[in-house]
Image (cartoon, rainbow, N blue to C red; front, side):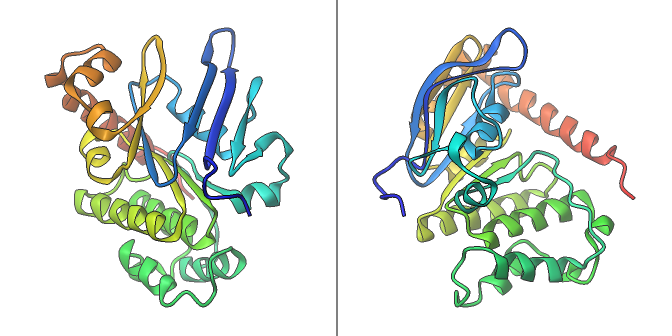
Length: 264
């Protein structure tokens, strides 16, 4: 097992481009253990960073390491053992009831099977008791998000990566979910890496913040430094007073997109 002194996620001279202009260019960044969140305007590479960090996408130059192991050399089983990935607006269609799927993920994953009460605790924290007997195709967007977050916890990967995991949840649910994920990460030595568009969530639950900016490489720092008025205005290139309005508009757009997603 990798030494805990290793960075759980490390980018070494990483470049990635979808067409001609690189989304990330020669990026070197080592994330510390704990809870790290990504903040910044749309189009600056946050989602790409998360998928690269999870090993589901490989850089065109440089390398990404998970727990000290280059992602380019991992097979599917090794990659899943090291990292779970929750995509933005993720769907999971199945005729099996949600409760049965939760038990399968837990028994087939890497958490200690003797962990006292973790399955029941996850069901309570993510408010899943009422959906345990329903197939996932019958779940609302918010129920689906809570179920998938529960899957990620119960599988027990060393690193858990989540892209906009709480956008469809009510405010109390968001705080409860992120508080649990943060406490669980710190208590188990799991690394939790996530992105959300509400700045208050980052202030409340993150140990570290990676700030993405227009025209500048991502920077790692404390929440106090990265979420300061000066840092945010430079990153978003809008006055501080408009940031909350801008982020709320983007969250509403994500919700509308999710509600427009056809479900069988």
